[in-house]
Image (cartoon, rainbow, N blue to C red; front, side):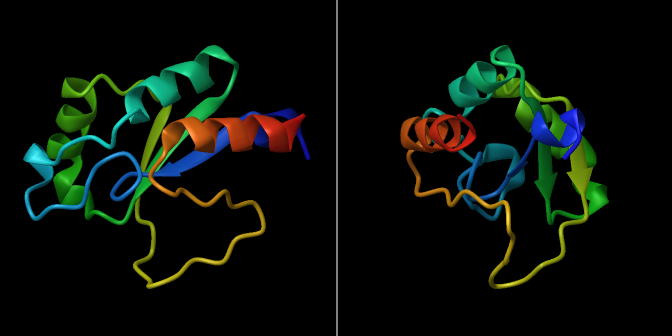
Amino acid sequence: MNSLEQNSLCIDLDGTLAEITDDYSSAPPMPGAADALRTLRFNGWKIIIFTARHFNHWEITTRWLNDNHFEYDQLVFGKPTARFYIDDRGINFNGDWDSTVTKLINTTQ
């Protein structure tokens, strides 16, 4: 694994950083999410946010991320829509950003 892969973290947008609603522009941020991303970036992680939203929602999405003070390095549109995702590098998000960051740190030490 090269250093880019070691220091990159892909994070889903809806249901992980933003609560799932019908109106993307007014979705509440998940509690602790913006602080968690700031902490991770401060600790050297490259934050890549990905979403299944259509690219037509780029402006609303970037405005929402900025308005809610999310720090990130890259935004990727085009995650395929599916009921489940199987990934050999996944960390399951349970709604608690503090435990997610702790789990990530413990896994990488």
